[in-house]
Image (cartoon, rainbow over all chains, first blue to last red; front, side, top):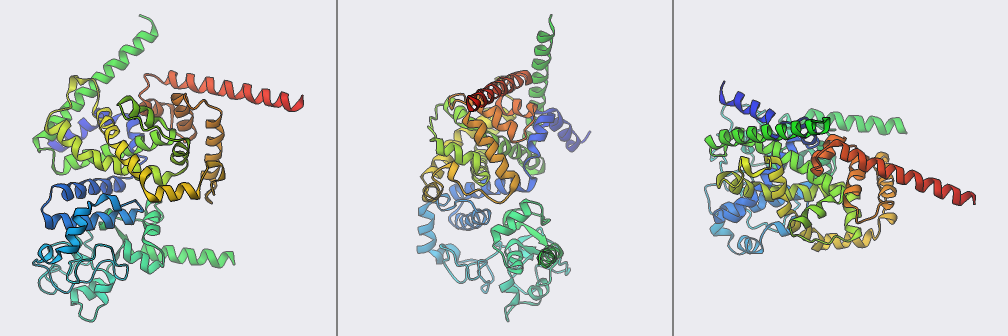
Length: 226
Length: 243
């Protein structure tokens, strides 16, 4: 028996494997649990990470908590906020591509520290298309493979960025823009399983077709009601 | 040996086997240093379980009894209890943040430092819920102290006056719960918890697990007494109306 089989068998026999524990567990989606674990990781990073990692973690945490509609102001220590505001250059001098748009677009955040602030993971491509050598547009697992719409539509956007504009998947932010609703509303629809999704938190991706179907149904519903 | 004793022995036996499986599971996870895909899968299930239980504890107000038993007298106001019963988003937020706080510490103390042991008497889930109870007070106080909470309290000064949302089932659910809980003495936390969880659709087995009761019969007993009291009260009200 390999380790995975052994693990599955032990899980079934453990405290988490009883029928009632399973029923209780099933009341929460795996995606939500993943988001909570991500929050735990980011909080840990804020407390124990290096200054630069702490800043990035703080940004992601606040973004994530805001998207969930949770209180977030007390989650990030004041000291880190001050650090971000007063010493952006030292913290952010890095190997990132310089012309990344802010992920928040017009919705500027309290911690915005520099126009050169990277939006995505530190593994940003240095040259056009280097993140997508095989032209695979459907990879929704890596943050660096998806772009904010404002980035993709920019005149200076790379070919890869323009191509991914038509990606089959949308982030919560992009879906919200397409649907003309708030990001919180998008997350609620995902939670209610009205919209299918993959990933969690800031990595959440929604099929473009599902967004269009939802809008079409809403539109038809309104017309029927008229 | 009477049937009750046999059942008790069987329960103890099952409990022992579960804890032995827990121990083997922890050993397996230790081989990977409590990291990697298997630990992720385990932690995911543990988080799902804990969030669900915490939400149920909050919904029923039982969490304050559990916290008090560990020395955290949060002294919730009646309005706090009502908001927790009425506001599923708030329950979700507090449960999620509590679990997020508890997970890394639990991994370190229970597993890496060997704080959880097979012979301690508690299974992993019970042990983790205990860990959550140490983090819940901070999250609850943070929420209670936040300006947003105070604003909400001003906007919704009382459960009775609350602007109910448009989801029919939720409205009906809240009204039934409100009426039911009004009829139970606030000091009878266990009875309130059993009734609230029953009305929220939990099965008696699940309630037994959530409240750490020994048997389903105990849950049935609480519900039976509550129904009997409610029926007697209704009869009395009717006779007073006629009189």
